[in-house]
Amino acid sequence: MLGARDEGGRLTACLGFLASHRGSNMQAVIDACRSGRICAAPAIVISNNRDSGALERAKREGIPGHCLNTTSHPDPDRLDTAIADTLQRYRADFVILAGYMKKVGPRTLKAFPNRIVNIHPALLPRYGGQGMYGTRVHEAVLAAGERETGVTIHLVDELYDHGAILAQQKVVVLPDDTPESLSARVLETEHALLVETVAGLVSGKIPLPGP
Ligand code: GRF
Image (cartoon, rainbow, N blue to C red; front, side):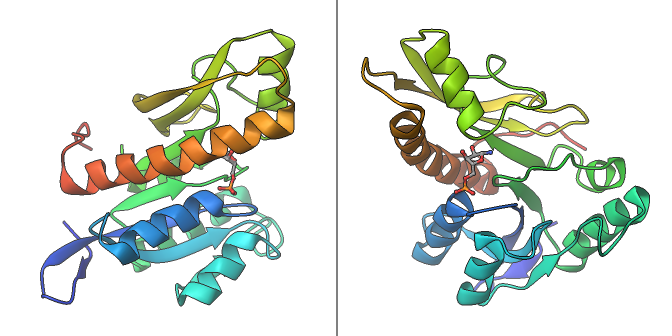
């Protein structure tokens, strides 16, 4: 069931985003929707961080943005319900975690079975799991002396960085890389791979398991 109609009246997928900070991956997907590279409508942005770049971008793009967090909903179950309800209210067909630093709750997982994807800046299952995020990932890759790292896009389940892998792309680690230089190079690949993967999901070229 697709949630929106495009200008020609065709049914189009609606995308919901969960993002905590800068939101550059989310922006890459929005830009691709605008340019027609992804046949979908960015429908709703939810952030746990009211000052996030992601919510600012949503405002700039005219996409509804909601801040839902432990301040707005101190009870974890109610917060989870509010997130699931908001995504459903905006008819999200797919939910993209674009730098979302919180665990997705059981109600949201149940409302979007096999329809929530996450992007991780390493080649999972290596350098993933609780506490492995942002610069920490790149620091760990460099400390281990890896010659390559990469990007993973995977389905979200109840564990951190754990669900089925949908796409991966390698990135070379250069001898003089710092966490910052490596992170910047990986981020470019993240943007490209996320756009390609979301385009594939929306078009059905990347098949997903049923609910
Ligand atoms: C990215 O590195 C992503 O892989 C990770 O968090 C970072 C978010 O960057 N999950 P941005 O907010 O999309 O710019």
